[in-house]
Image (cartoon, rainbow, N blue to C red):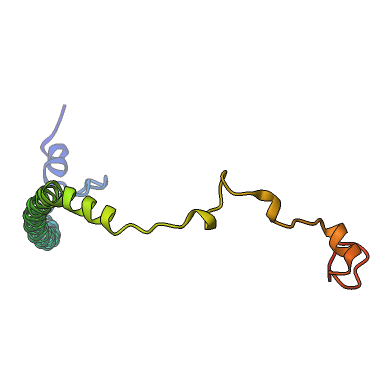
Length: 155
């Protein structure tokens, strides 16, 4: 049978020698831990904002440079078109002048041509017997080369 004294120490915990399990979460400790996590998250978000601002600035710079490059391309294409038109105009003008003055230039060239008398021409109608051609051996034998023993090696 259980007496009142047997029940008292158990209910009050006075004579209980078993250690109490430690509380896992004390409210002030949990609040401090969550505040620390919140501060870390805020710092992380601030870092992400800075990175995002840097990326936005880089994107704006890139967009500005791209706009400048596109404007330059448009200007260069306009210059190319203008120069192509001018080239075509000058080509057409040269062809027109060639057609207009070609016969006149040909007649002028024929009128002022340079002719060489037949006796000074070198060709099939010239007599080759009049040209004196001697070999190196014959020139050596005649003494025209000086003291040379081998005409292939003149010093």
